Image 1 (tube, each protein chain N blue to C red):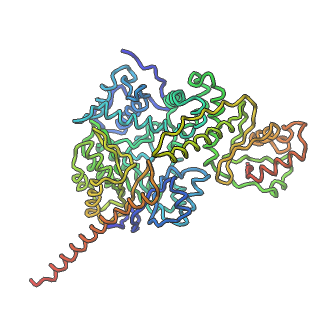
Image 2: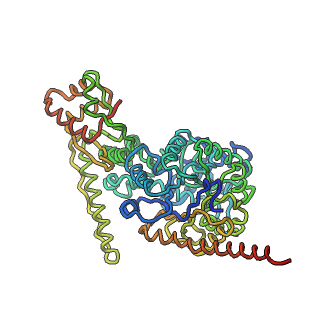
Image 3: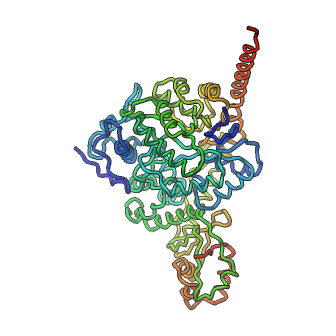
Length: 312
Length: 296
C-alpha cells in the first residue's frame, strides 16, 4: 500500500486509525474532529480534488465513508471534498491577498505551489486569517526549492510584505515626548520602538519593487473597470526584477496608513540598537564615527514626529 | 417577541453587515441604518485602521458583534487569550448581545477557518453547551448561537440538526441567531423540510435572524453570501417572523459586494414581510378581542 510522504502539519496531533463509531465522550469528539481536520489539511491534487489516499495509504474514499454519510447525490468522498476545497481556496486566497509582490516575483503557478507547500506544513495556528503568512519567510528559508533560484529575494519580499501586516494593525503605545526623553540622561535612557514598526535590512530595494507591482495592479484594475463591456485589458506588464543593492527600510504607519521609509545605514544601526534595548548613548555610538550630532538630531526629530518611540 | 433576554431586551430592526468596501461611503455619507453587525475577529486587533474605523462607526451607529472563530463545538477548551481580546472588544462596542456559530473549526489549536458541522449527539450537545456557558460567563453578555449551512452529515449523529440546536440552547440557556438561508441550504443538501426545522426551533429563544443569498450547484447548494436573497429564503423568513415575532434581522453580503445602496435596498425587502407579520398579528388580536366581547 503506498504511504503518504506528506509532512505532518505543524502543531496537529496524529489522527486516530479509524473514526469513532459512536460519540459518547469528549475524547470521541476530539478524535472525530482530528480525523476530519487531517483530511481537510491534506493538500488537494493538481486538479484541486481531495487527495485520493489517506495518510496510511488507504483510499480516501474508504476513510471518508467511515465518518461521513453519503446521500442520494454525493458520496462521502464528494461531501468531504466540498469542505477540503473550501478550506484550501480560503487559505490560499488569504495568503494571495497579502503577497502581491511575492506573487509577481514567482509568477502565479510557482507562488501557488509555494503557498500550498507552506500551508501543508504550517497550517493556521491563530483564530484570525491575518496571521496566515506569519511563518512564510521562515518556510522560504527552510524549503528553498519552492522559490529557487530567487530564494533570497523571495525571502526579502516575504519579510517586507509581512511587515506591512504588522504595520496595519499592531498596537500603538503612548508616544514618548521630547520632554519625557529630556528628563533622563542618554546614558540611562532606553527607548522602545512602536510594535507596529519593523526594521528591515535587505539586499534588494523590495519597497520599490512591491510599490511598482501594486501600482501596476491598481492601474490594471482601473482599466478593467473602464472596459467592463469592451475588449479585455492588456496582459499584465512584467515588472523588472530589482537590482541587488543593500537598503534599510522602516515599515510603519502614520497615522493609520502604511508607509515605508528608507533610512541610511547609520540611522538603521541606531534604530536596531534601540530596538535591542541599548541605551540612547550606546545606540548613537553604534552608528559609528562618520555621523555628526546634527545628523543624529535631525533623524530623531523626524522619527519622533512619526511617533516611532514609546516607553520600554 | 422582538425583545427578549437573548438580545438584551433590545428592539433592533433591520441591520447590515459592516464591510470594508462600504467604509468610505458610511463614514462620509452617514446613511441611515438601524444597526451594523461587525465580524468580531476583524476588530480583535491591537491597533491601526480597523479600530480607528470602528470607533468612528460607534460614534454614529449601534453595533452588534458576530463571531466566526469561537467554535463552541470544538473539543478544545476556550482560549483565554482569545476571550480576553473578545471581551475588550465587547467593552468597546457595548454590543447588547454577541453571536457565533454552532459549529467547530479547530482542533489542537490548528484552525481551518471554516464553520464545520457538528455531529448531532447528546455528548456533543453537552460539551458545546458547557462551552457556551463558560464563554458567556466570562464575557458577561447574552449569547446567540447561529445554525450553520452544511454539506456533510456524520454517521455518529443521533438526532436532527434542529433537535441538536434545541438541546444545546436549552442546556446552555442561550439564544439563537436563526439563519434562515442556512436552514434552506442545509434542507436542500440533506433532503429535509425546512419548515420542519422552523417548527422544531424554540421560537422564544430567537434573538436575531440572518438572511443571505446562496449559490446553486448541480448537486448541492453553497452558502456564498454573494447574491440577493432568493425567494424560497424570503418565504422561510416570513414564516420565521410569524413564528418568532418581528426580530432583529441582518442581511449578510460578503462576496462580490455591490454598492451600499444595493445592499441596503436588498435588506429593506425584509420590511414587507415584517409588515405582513404585523398585520397578521394585529388581525389575530382583533379577532380575539371580538370573540371575547361577543355576547354569549
